[in-house]
Image 1: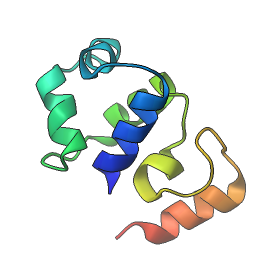
Image 2 (image 1 turned 30 degrees about the horizontal axis):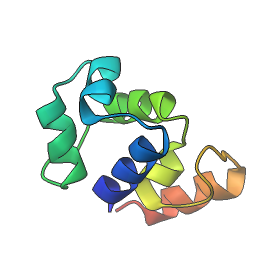
Image 3 (image 1 turned 135 degrees about the vertical axis):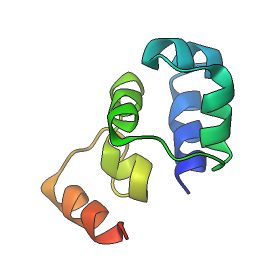
Length: 83
């Protein structure tokens, strides 16, 4: 689930929900909703989150590859995992 991977990546960077929210321009309540899979972020927001958390869209969306690894295989697997 996106929320669990988001939380894992955030905690790995020792950031609070408020820290992440401030850096990407949303509320900490919205970050909480994302982490609990109650909301789905826009692609633009998800990219901003990935940049702040130093990870990839592939990891956040599909749990593919290592955090921060942006290999072509990961991108292909991520695309295949999308509906």
